[in-house]
Amino acid sequence: MSAAMETKLHLAQGDLHNHSVTDLAALLRARKVSAVEAAQHFLSRIQSHTNLGAFLSVDEDATLAQARAADARLAAGTAGALEGVPLAHKDIFVTRDWPSTAGSKMLSGYRSPFDATVVSRLKDAGAVNLGKLNCDEFAMGSSNENSAQCPVGFIAPEPVKNPWDLSRIPGGSSGGSAAAVAARLTPAATGTDTGGSIRQPASFCGITGIKPTYGRASRYGMIAFASSLDQAGPMARTAQDCALLLSTMCGPDPDRDSTSLDLPAEDFSRQLNDSLEGLRIGVPEEFFGEGLSTDVRAAVDSALKTYEKLGAKLVRISLPRTELSIPVYYIIAPAEASSNLSRFDGVKFGHRAAQYTDLGDMYQKTRTEGFGDEVKRRIMIGTYVLSHGYYDAYYLQAQKIRRMIAADFQQAFQRCDLIAGPVAPTVAWKIGEKSDDPVANYLADIFTLPASLAGLPGMSVPVGFGANAMPVGMQLIGNYFCEGQLLNTAHRFQLETDWHNRKPAGV
Ligand code: GLN
Image (cartoon, rainbow, N blue to C red; front, top):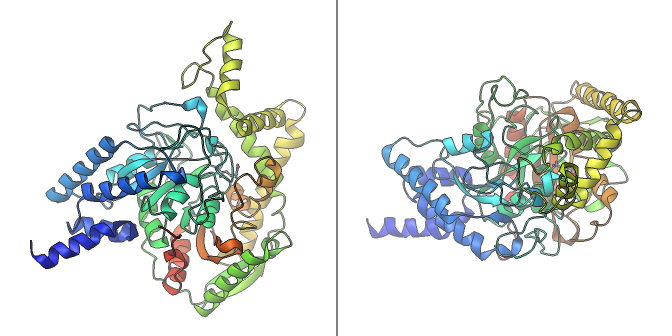
């Protein structure tokens, strides 16, 4: 090898964590760096940043085995679209070679006999798994303070830290994913979004994330929270990377998830670089009311101005039931959770109480010990709203309003092509600040819940910094199946701005 080539290789390696997924895939394909070198680079970053609490499990041997297999395919010329690219999975996805805990004590040490469909699709494209990422227990939360699992480097459960300010939460429930991408411990991660869990942590950590239309990505092997809302999506630094990853993650899975859509896999990068000239961006007045902090508003307003410069037109719209999305979601999601979590009874999965007198006692002790406070709260709410006598008053009523929320969006989309607004009312708060107040956490979900209830695609794009120099994300919501257009709208913004390239001090 020539001296010049060696220097290039050296530069590429020392700097690998600063490359996007798109660049890394190209470097790997050109054999400028090997999959094993890339995996080693990120594994060593994970080890030197355990203070963030982002990872719940790493297994160097399993990662390097995948990397060696990727190198063999690269050498043989049979490489997939993501061959050798390292990434990491939220611990809500089951994986055969790593433990799968959903952040719950209930699943401590659980090993799945199979990979989730999203995990196997990424693996089939050549991606190399770096490990499993911390999250709120069963994805219930907005701050990642609800994880009952002990992160790598700790001996007891520990909240994930926001890399921009270690005294603050990274958001949730995909908080480990967002913190790891922001700290460049992995070029990208998977997340899941039931009521905002991709968009809100992406916003709080200054990265990009997308939740596709409900049904785009298979839920098979995603440990269920609220099945009519749960969706998987990628979290990365750029919209371009999200497009590449989403194209691999989505696709029909009729034998395993009956709600997966019967649509052919799509290349979401296809529309990148479409002009925004004449694009009608709907700005919902309900997203800019009193509840929105002035710093977040300023960053979002300035992003909207950038869009106007790019040729888009802003259209004032109304989503009149925005506020109702909180009670509706916090009836429907717990109702579904109470049903989904009934499978954790100590018989088939994970934890079982050590001592009990009879079967009933075994169920009770197992569930008392295995579930955390927030999960128990939701099981109680869910059981209550589904019970005879309250079903009509709460659950059925919530279902009706859910339909109206979806209809409000369709009315709005007659006047605009996509919708823009804040992801969350404030920037990331301090660890512990809201941990004793579940309702305060629920209220902070106000802007992400409507799109979730309607099953629409939504994303978060970094648009600046607010109070305490914390990142602010803008939410873009598209109509059904318009992920390509959403990603392009975010991509064009990222060509104009460099918020997505900023990195926390010390990273
Ligand atoms: N914060 C919401 C909740 O606690 C959303 C969580 C999610 O999307 N998984 O339910």
